[in-house]
Image 1 (tube, rainbow, N blue to C red):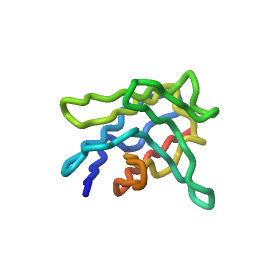
Image 2: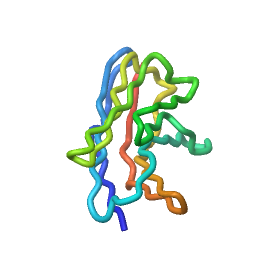
Image 3: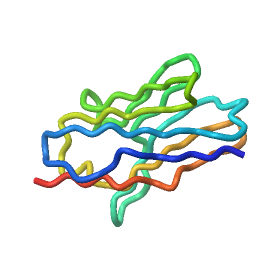
Image 4: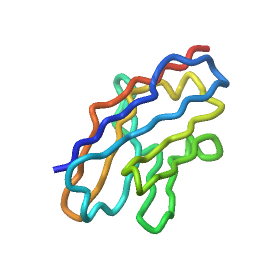
Length: 115
């Protein structure tokens, strides 16, 4: 099993920045990718960004150029640097680790962007 603990959410004004962190513990052998998803009220969960073991990254269209995902393998941690935040970025952000046949999720951290 893998346990994921997110931190770094909060309230920020539009144009501001936040950095989310997700630390993993447990058996992380075989993890293929790490990523962030978000879910706003009344909307489906969507991909924000992910990063594979080879370092390749993938971003949702709405965050390209504003958000940056990174990982620290020594700390089993993935980060999401969020800049130029907009009110439409308001959502619960979830950390996600993927194995070939399994997905692991954090408990979520609230990000609220005020206009």
